[in-house]
Length: 130
Length: 131
Image 1 (cartoon, chains in turn blue, green):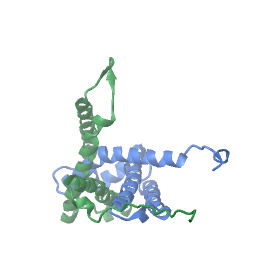
Image 2 (cartoon, rainbow over the protein chains, first blue to last red; image 1 turned 135 degrees about the horizontal axis):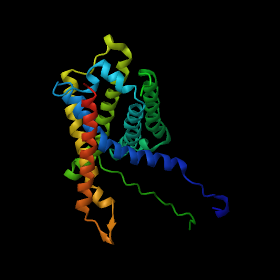
Image 3 (spheres, rainbow over the protein chains, first blue to last red; image 1 turned 120 degrees about the vertical axis):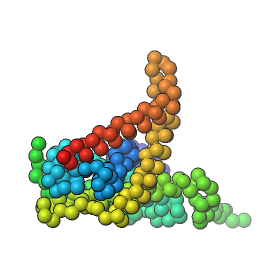
Image 4 (tube, rainbow over the protein chains, first blue to last red; image 1 turned 30 degrees about the horizontal axis):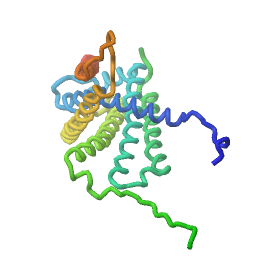
């Protein structure tokens, strides 16, 4: 191969996906367990009052722009992380097709779709309030 | 004599069920699998956000026994992911103070401390603003 025919370019797509994967792992590890414990177990069992148990408190906190940003980070970053992990889980379990371009489009495209749905829900659910 | 030498590509194929042969292989796969229940739980969380569009009379938070049981299972997977992730910090992160390396055990401890502090703040916000 002619060495002059290849140009070195920054791999911006790698930069983006590895950044999302790494940050998604950190966010999933640090933030998700407490949400599951409080909103998934303690709240529904009535052990503690939780903000999402009543419409008034839930809509009020959802209107805060910082909370909207937090929820977007809580969902979007981990979904890119999960997309990568689940794709390679399939590879590890003997599904080489999971390495293919269509599989990448499905998994990472799914993360993009979930992120867009989250943005849309956060913008349409509660009016911004400070 | 033929000048072409036929080469055959050797492809290693992992045997089916390889991950059931050793406990550490199994737990590696379990760790990778944790993504699925956590993703489903986050989608459930997103549904809770969407339900707020129904207005004060139509809003019904997740309360079923099935949801609580599912959350308990997800919490197990989430804790497994977090604990294994934070435990690796001692291997990945290297710091020096006054030219002396900080012991890896201290690095891991600081990560667990940060996790506990962040969790306490989030729990406080979720409970305090419910009043």
